Amino acid sequence: MDDDLRERLRRTRRVPTPWGDDRTRGISATRLHELLEHWANGYDWGVHERRIAEYPWVTVRTGDTDLRVIHQRSADPGAPVVVLLHGWPDSVLRFERVLPLLADTHVVVPALPGFPFAPQLTTPGMSVNRIAGIVADALDELGYPRYTVSGGDVGGTVAELLAAGHPERVAALHLTNVAPQRALAADPAKLAPDAAAYIGRAARWFRTEGGYIAEQSTRPNTLAVALGDSPAGLAAWLVEKLEAWSDESAFTQDELLTWVTAYWVTGTIGTSFATYAEPVTLPDRIDTPTVLSVFPHDLKPEPRSYAEAFLNVRDYVAHPAGGHFAAWEQPEAYAADVHRAVALAGSRH
Image (tube, rainbow, N blue to C red; front, side, top):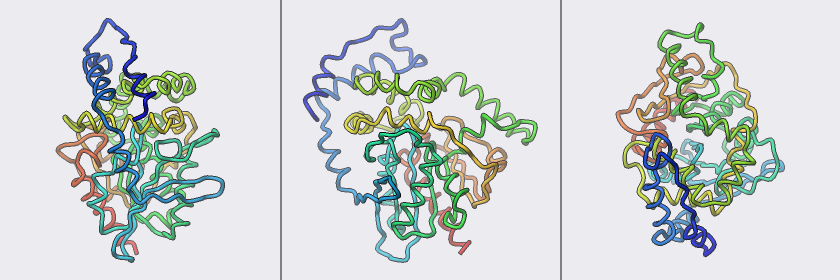
């Protein structure tokens, strides 16, 4: 870890608030202090950097854009293809624990444009719609005409758009949530009663928990300075979400700091806001066969009736544990559901 980061951490100005350790007001002062102390004096980024570098990375040129991906090939040349799409505030690291469980498939894990480990993003317009097109072109360049796509959060929205735009290529979907933009536009009067009730719950979540979305989507430049120049600010912003959105004890201190340091060393916190700030256009419905995995500690788990209003849900799997980062928190359950989707894809050939 470079000297500049350690020096910034050691010179962190403690910012008092009237709420101190009230975790309903954000990350607690005590928790942040212990993380910053460990980051400055005990944490070794080099160990994790070397591990990450050892993945089978390749860079695929698509038009005027480079897409960097982890390309894990199966020993079986004819194995099915699985594409794993991460979200925010994470990266390809979301899938580290799942990769060994998918050795029977060819796996492609793109570092989505603007996120850690991707080439530097310097121009506007990197919407989820554009990212879906870039991923499709990259898979074509890799020689994969047919595949199953799995994702959640931003990656789930990209997955839906991939399926909508390339139904001849996407054989099946595996999602951990429905694209959240749908809840903002849905008409409760056209939904089943429990789906309409879900719209109300989602609206309450956006009011009480969605402040970060408003800032990242409307004032990304301002926020990027606050977080990109202060490791303490970056840690506070990200760790609050990582801990609040996951099941109990999902991360050790080193794991949390690795996910945060990935943003710091790549300088991508500001560019990761692109998928919030750029507009998205979603189709009314997607007919690709879909497995929906629902984890109880995710942000706002959807009932089946709601998902079926937009997706061709063939399998709805409610899990007893896990949260927003399910591939990390419950890798065996996640991989099993990916295999369910692969089986659906196989039945369509």
